[in-house]
Image 1 (cartoon, rainbow, N blue to C red):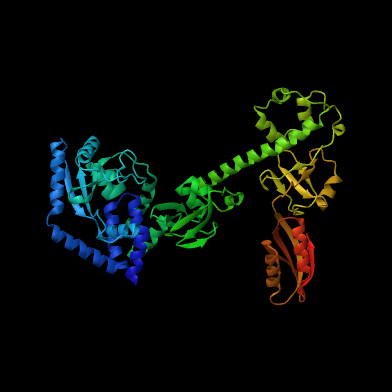
Image 2 (cartoon, rainbow, N blue to C red; image 1 turned 180 degrees about the vertical axis):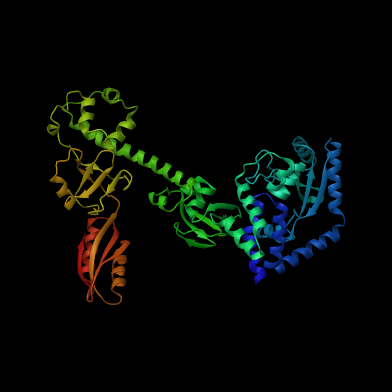
Length: 546
């Protein structure tokens, strides 16, 4: 069991880490040793097949290697060519990925050609492709586009004699050293100081090696130094993703690709569906669930911790906010135009932009929506003299501004003091450089503001629009203090197709307790039906809308 635990840790963390920094020989050895412990039967079976194939094929690999070397030599490229069967673990992984048997696997031989220069790599590739047909989709140029860990090489697969597929890697001695020993190889071929991000923690690792007193202390300190501030998670395809400690699937999705992050709706951690707020642990396999209709949400800013994720979310929210503010500003602008004493010509807006020193129409609409420009200033710019000296004498708003199609929290905010829902009579409160705050008409906060003389506060007549989407209402429910009372409340709310967002215990005594419940409802009628159903329950003493 101890061997299996260590093997799993090695396979999940240390082998991918070795690959990440380009130490492929170490990676292969760790994978093989771990595979032998984790899948002993598969290891024995594949190893036996490889041994039988080697006996049956004789010196087939050495013959192919000699043929490759002769081909390149005749083409003017001196090459050192070596061949091998692929490792048992590599074959096992391919069999699982392709869902095929050992007999169906055609590419079990791999060859490596070491040539003097980078130019020789491409010359050798041309010679090989002229001699044998290439397997489509199997050519990779890691010289022109190296892997993230700095790995460079040419990879190709060709159909050799007897319809056998063989894999060939072509590289220079420097590339080969880097592939075997990763960053450590740079000190052999490049004496200049390197500034790779990985170098710093490798230096810390060397320092720990020098200062550790025991193997146990070395392991503990090594894990702390390497993983204290970062974790390593895997994609379903086995790609290693480095993240800071405390990262969530949102961070993981954006680390893979911005589009994947934008469309994330959930995640699977080690095959189990989890919410996007789940913290990823070291070695987790993460699969992001996506939807083309999804867009980044404002609450994601509370979930993400990586700079890339936060920047992408903020960028999307800024664009969405700008678009919606342009839409809202356009609606307000159209009402301002209707309130002018006379109709304006087609060039009035162009002249108004010049007078207001606005670069374009969109900037003007945003300024109107955020009330950095007053209605009077816009009127005066559109029709000089229309506003007059007496701002109070301005024509009143001609029609209610519909907020249908706009997103709460982006173009406008639903006030948390009164929790308005579609069907409530509402009014908008505008303050400079802020979005419209929508209140229910009976909200006590509005009564307090009406008693003040605040020139910066502006009132806007707003409406929900037809078939507006739902909103969150808050209700206060007093129930008998007995077992199952809260369950009965939840059942009634669920039966009426409302969704509980939050529950908070407000007061409690020996006989009753009062809960504040935030519920998503379609409209005012839906909320009234829900309140009526709750009042009819035996355990409920009192229900009020907050």
